Image (cartoon, rainbow, N blue to C red):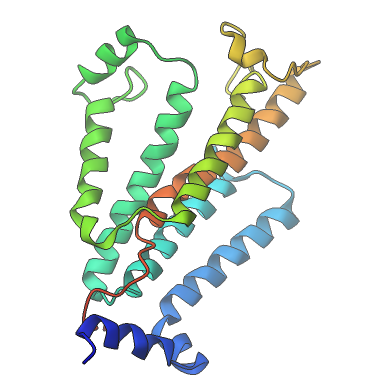
Length: 234
């Protein structure tokens, strides 16, 4: 006799396209919205939505939310919990990128001590490491819906490679004045020669955009294949 979990999995496998579209209609709508934003960004030939907000940021954060929502829905979690976990996952994604970007400038015991002793909320003064760790920790209230999986490992590897490419290219930054790092050998890995500030700015925006895949990593923690029980979705 099959267990409840096996029955749920088998039932999901037998669902036809119409049933799947109805079940995952919210995810489909969100996915179409993300695709529309991505297409508009390409056609507009611009990196920014407005001000300093990158299209890549909007797309990656929305994608993190949508994938988390889908992965947890597939595990038959109710709507309210799906929303809560997806929001936590998106916040974690933002923090994952902030960690990578901030410590891409270098890390030392003195810096860690300074960051971990800062309990304020002004990140422009000191990196709010304690608060970020606390926010990340809340994500793991959903640990029963998580597992280490191939897709998670692949996304982490791609993220690491892209971040290393940015750092190894001199870690160009576009905040005024545009500059590149040269105080550690790692920043010289690819021996990129920046001939003018416009080149620094362009490389900075390209790398800042493509490395936003880091913000999608938390969603793949929830890419657990087996359903956990009877559906409670609404």
